[in-house]
Each structure stands twice: as structure tokens, then as C-alpha cells.
Image 1 (cartoon, rainbow, N blue to C red):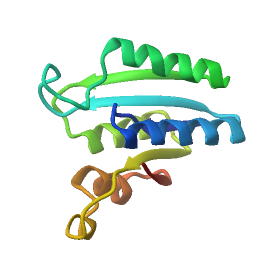
Image 2 (image 1 turned 30 degrees about the vertical axis):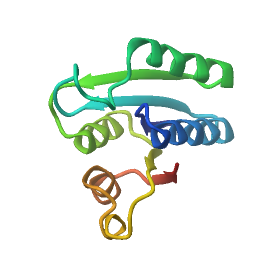
Image 3 (image 1 turned 135 degrees about the horizontal axis):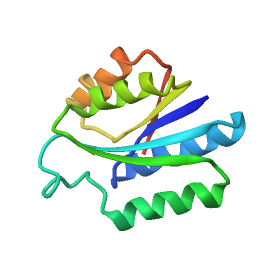
Image 4 (image 1 turned 180 degrees about the horizontal axis):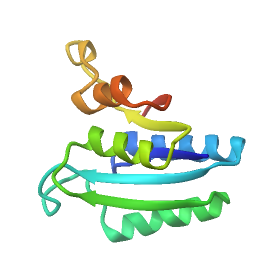
Length: 129
């Protein structure tokens, strides 16, 4: 089976990666790390550089976890991309990171987080950063 993790360069993305590694080791599963840009890959602060993606590959290897790292810059919604890949690889789990929010922000998790939680067929583990 495979665990899909939504990865960003922000603390919530790093927390999601670490939890995905923990789950993969506990259940002897592979990991697919997705870094997605919904728009302009040149100016998207959540889009990882090649050096950052190489660091993710090293983290997986050092943890003894089989995995692939994919960066998608197709102009599609990140939640849709994660859902599509999760279905494609028949994911056993999707791991996403959540950032702390203001009281008003807590009313709505965020468009991508909410869409992933509500629309992804696989179980979703949301990790606080």
C-alpha cells in the first residue's frame, strides 16, 4: 500500500512529511510525496526548489522508507491533484499538514484542507504544525 503526503516548504508540510514517514515505517508502506502549485510555479512560495526536493528524498532514504517525490505544476487545484494521485496509487492514507489559525480562520480549515478531508476516498490524517 501507499501513503500520499501533501508537502510544502512550510512547517505544516514538514510536519505532514514526518508523520507520513512514521506511518510508513509502522505499516511498511511506500510514500508518495506531492508538492503542488496551483498557478505560477515561478512565484509560488509553497513550491519546493529542486534542492528542497532532493532533501526530501534524502529524508526518506535515511528513514528507510521507499518513496517517490513528485512536483506537479499543472495549474490544477492542489486538493484535486492530491485526490487524483491518491486514487491513482490506491492510497491507504493521505497525510496533510494544518497550520494554526485565528479564531475566525478556525471556522473554515482552508479550501484545500477542507476539500481533501471531504472529497478524498482514502482516510485522511491531518497533522498540526
